[in-house]
Length: 240
Length: 240
Image (cartoon, rainbow over all chains, first blue to last red; front, side):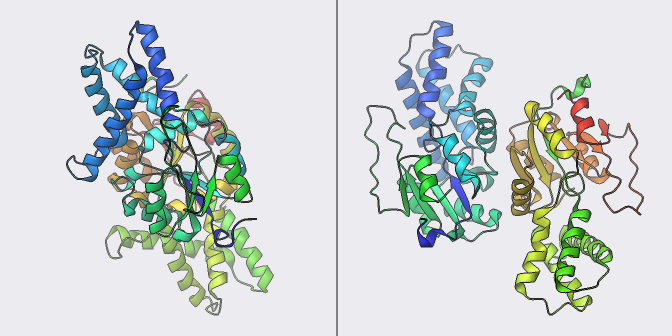
């Protein structure tokens, strides 16, 4: 039985990196394939982690206006270029760099995602609400068959989450009140910002997002409107 | 065989009202049902035409900055309210007005649209590029099962087509050059504006858009990159 205050919800918007797709496992598989095909012996786990955290730091610089607005796809590329330099791979040409950066367009969803969304889509409008750029989200969804009704991105307001304008835009474009929109995310900062804008919120636990050795953030069961271990449990909690 | 200069095309973006959906037939059916259920004897064809052309005139006022930015959904409602007044229906309350205005969210596609898009989606990214507001396009697509990969709207730049910024935004958000994007539309003004921005263009002939008695605009076969009588022919022309 859906919680009473969630009965108004008409649309679910999803954080994507970590919540919907396993960015780390997907990038690692691509990089290892690439390395094997070129005979490059590198610590690809460290490379992926440096890429991810480097890009997170670059997003912080955009948020702080130390960098002009730069979309997520171009930030990935900026950090990739730096990492190739550091790892004595500066000889890689444009085709290889572009192919590697496009790995972010080919991330794989967690195993529960497609069956969960298949149930949820019957009852709700489903959209992304991601810091990823529109092209990345569209290409990823097409390849992985993610059934979004709408692709909403921080790029549309040229600010990254948790800027309130990102959430405001989402409810405005959907023609809904904030309380009619529920954000699904695996990260506290994102859910807290959405909640502050009046959105409903569902936390999904993704303990493997940062790899098997890393303790995940712990969010208690009463911190947000819903707590789910995966999208199938989430569908059940939302009567879908 | 696809024309050589169209081989770069990766995404198709579609005008929606008239090109994808039969707004006139769909609205007429809804209004007649509504009238019958209330015992209202009105000339619903004239009503629909006045609604459509009133809304077109209101869009022109927004383009000329005589009205502040107002999305398409709210323009429909503004004209609806005026028409109800004129037709001695001012007694209709908020529920009825809202229900009638939501008819724009429930427009039906022409018969060739779903089979044509089903073929085209295998080869191309498919999106809207409409003056319709995002919520209208999303709700319409979900109901009619239009398989858009992305919903792009003039609302995202707060200007209506044929403003060049609408087309520029579309290619930028898709991460593509203009020549990699093809606009499909049943209207010369829209295709001409897209072409001026470097888009590829396909005209689709929709002779019944404005009703059976109205001569459609005639566009010759060599005016744009492609000329198709429907989306199935279009799929064939694009090798999909």
